[in-house]
Length: 79
Image 1: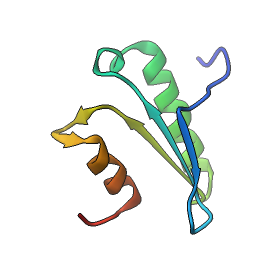
Image 2: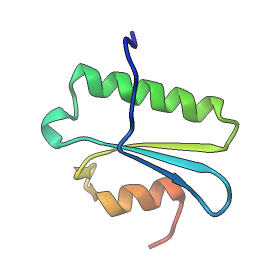
Image 3: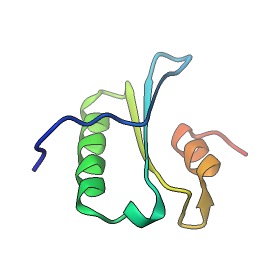
Image 4: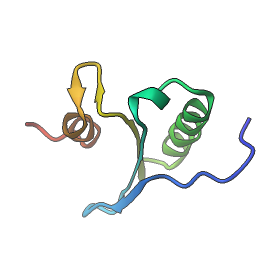
């Protein structure tokens, strides 16, 4: 249950008008309760944004993908 404010690490207005929000966590924090709560909030915000918002819970490396690849995949950039 959310019990306070959530200040993401990065917020960007994309050229196409969408808002891209990134919350970055060190690997040691990737699975803690606070991180999961923020991920839930971000994912719900993205879902309710009507396609105008993108949320990424990023870590240094996830599923063999470094940070730049995680961002590119979220933005659907080939590379």
